[in-house]
Length: 359
Image 1 (cartoon, rainbow, N blue to C red):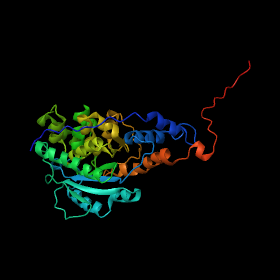
Image 2 (cartoon, rainbow, N blue to C red):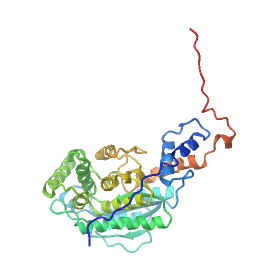
Image 3 (cartoon, rainbow, N blue to C red):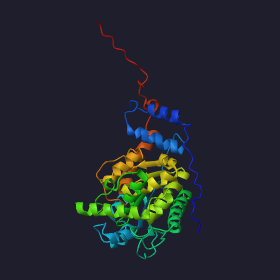
Image 4 (cartoon, one colour):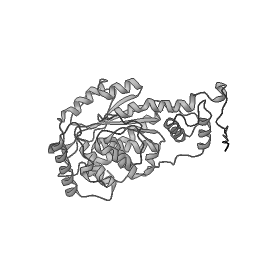
């Protein structure tokens, strides 16, 4: 199998309708700019879709799952069996992502990218398993280049299929015990930030556990080395869910879809994707800032403005799902809110009042 990445053509976002979109927003029956960031969101979505009447169709949430060999080094407080157990839970509509997807009208699909378990067939399970978990990257690359490419292309294919079925907005979440460790390693390398500033408690490590996790990552980076190729870095230190999500994000941007980014793990996939093509960032909405300490610095590196700050650290796509109704509101402002003319309200936005002060 070839290991080079085919050129993915991500188009620049058109500026053609920018003035018309702004004029339409300003003519809504409200003071100019009074809906703040909601108006900025409406502008972004309308420009991505290149229309004055943006809308979302067939919104999908992809929660991508995989196991990680690095957990053998004691970097997680949870047993790895939780990964497959939670996948089954999600498929039955459970967990945070099951609840929020159902509550907010997102079509939840779970992707087995590399879980150490053989799942029975399920109508909402996508079998994209490359292997039964990644290797322990303290001693060898997490994935071979061929395996990493397979996972990356799986993500592309999955997103392409949804787009062809009419989906124009897609959220990404993840499930994988130990996956804050590869995410922290990728963050440190791609952002140039010391490992100690990237690691956090994950699913419940204490201070000593966090320090141990940082040492394991530092030793692994020292042994594996840092490649000048972002794809090599992904193969050495990533995971199957991260590679699958990165490929999916690239494909979504190439198809001019809205990308809903969740927390720490999915943002590490975005770091990979934007290192391959910075324009993928333009199609992305960052849903929230996680309580995992490295996430805020990730977002700062990406110059991202997250919608929510709720101290979330569950993952699964929950933050992205919670942000979706906000995006719906932003789009409704532009597409459905009454204008001054429709409401028969006098538009005073153009009136200037001069106040003269007598000496």
